[in-house]
Image (cartoon, rainbow, N blue to C red):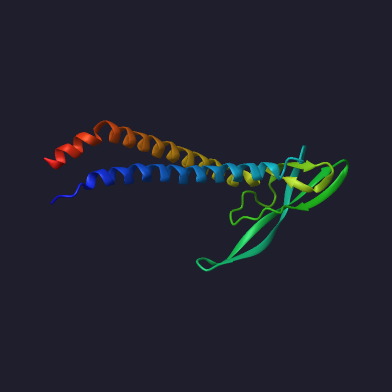
Length: 167
């Protein structure tokens, strides 16, 4: 007695494609969230100023895989409303996007000059968010198409295959 395995496999395959599609839609949503979080946190930083990186704050991150790792946050010096300010970034990274002595463009919150945004420093986070969005969206579309093709194939050819296998 032969069992019809293909019919069950087709249902599982179609469902698997749609499950993968939903997973990658979630990945894409995370990328969108990450991108909007970077932008939203700095929406009050509207005034452009030229700044210089005068120092690097060093902190340490500990993980079971890498052990103790140095992470850096730049300290900027700039003039705003005729006053000199020295402000440390609150964005730490293990990769220096800027170095001491670099001249950079900052956006400053006019109501709170301690709130700054450096596009150069946040470039890596924005790139990662864009990559996550593209990969998640692209793979979601791919699995949606595969799921639709599998579903249509099952509708069009499913009964013929079952009849051929039973002969």
